[in-house]
Image (tube, rainbow, N blue to C red):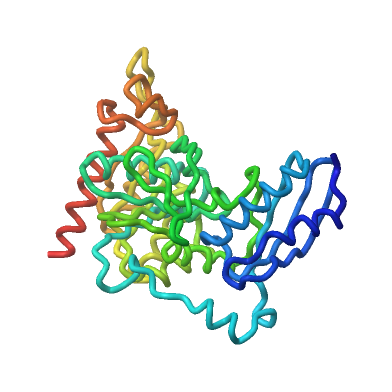
Length: 350
């Protein structure tokens, strides 16, 4: 059954903005058969409130016969908010960002996409968990979010007491923009909105006690990377590159940005360093050699590890196609890198 635009507006009168306690603001509606595309404005986005509204909209429209729903959210403009509204929306300092927080933040950065940074971030988080630490992982790669897919995460966050409870896999608590995107839709937000979203990942999520929080940054030196440096002045960084000279050249820019923000670089991980034949054991250096060491030398930091091209085998974590098990040689490499990072941070604290 195809729903008219007028009928959709009537149905959504039962959905309110949880922060302002009034009807949600619908910017745009498009109907194509049983597919409905909506653009909605809320007082707060990328929050527990958006997640609640998102689920209500989907439920209401599917019960009315819609087959598929595409949702986009944006924040209400300042001129659309009353003085009373603005008072309600005054942010509190997130506990993870307070000066008393004991959580150590490690940002995983790269100069360009396609170097396997997110896979490295996920495996490093799992390794820290295997070493006995309480770990959180934020997928801050807003436009290219992939951590839930890499972790093969089926659960979505829950809402309790107006807080987002992050799902957990392999002992790692996970938060991603993927949870706020229906049907793997692209994120069309601009810089200021992305900065607010990132802040909400700290203020709106009930992380509990964490020893380490890893941030999978977007590649390059754009708006989100800048926001991370502004929000997290005490974050440490690990640079990821491939051995190829061009990738290393671009990764250098990410390192320089970290240094300008006074973020200490813990080291470099060279991903896709080589391919090793299962039959002969011979190594093929598909992307060349030396890029990781060149970046490490440039910033006078250690090369933490050279990870080969491979997929987890029979000892991978629960049959995962991306997460290496502790019995696998690459899993042991990640455990070693995680242990080195921990020692480096303990030395800094001392």
